[in-house]
Amino acid sequence: MQLLELGWDAGPGTQVAPWTLSGIEASAQGAALEVVHERICMADPCPQREHGIRTTLPGARRPRAVPDAWFGRHLCMVVPCAALDPDSNDGIGPLGAALRALDGRIGGPLRRESARVAARMLSTVFASVTLVIDGAWWADMSSASGTARSLLPLQRVLTVHAERPDPAWARTLQQTFDPWLAHRLGLSRRGAGLDHAIRGVGRGGDARWPRAHATPGPNRSRGLAGRALEALWKPAPAKARLGPAVPGDLGRAWSSWPRLGGPS
Image 1: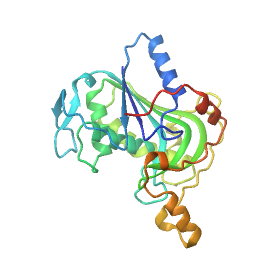
Image 2: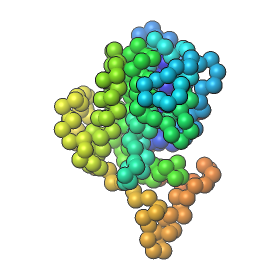
Image 3: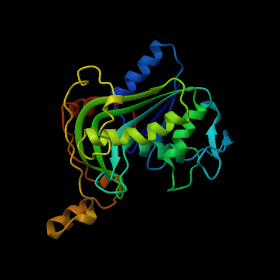
């Protein structure tokens, strides 16, 4: 099994929760599956330059270098539930952002990564696919600073699985999941009517979803207080950035869980 862990930085909501990874690895061991674990930083996906099979994917203007070990494997891709600039017209949801980073990982054009190309890659390279969106928190992220502006506790894990992924599945995946999530969080009406495709299980299956409130970007701030807030979110060295408070019952679990390291 190829385990791809994607994340932005080593923080709640922007990194996959360590207990989610532990559960996946334990399940794989119980099924006697060999796990190859790779971490991908979504801010800098580090394209594959060696040991890759160059192939032309549908919708791509140039070939991609796909690691030969990926072909024919089962993929388990795990991503945090973080959206980029959800308040703007150019905002992108957690799955779309992960697919763009995945395209960058296989050599997609710098700053022009295509979620569509990556989705088609999933349906042509891997034998089966499981996508896990770790919803311990929903994170409102700023693309300008690369940091989370606010966190909302969801305490959910969302999964999508395909035994035989094909182009139709890839297209549906790209077009429906993020709009559905935005609708459930009260951020958009585009995903209305998609609930029939989602099945809730466990204690969270029927639980009411919290409502998120997107944080306006710095360019919308006004007045002295607005300018002070804008200064807090300007790009700065990682250690100097001010992160949001960690809400919810899982905050204590995050601080006490043994550190596994961030995406690299």
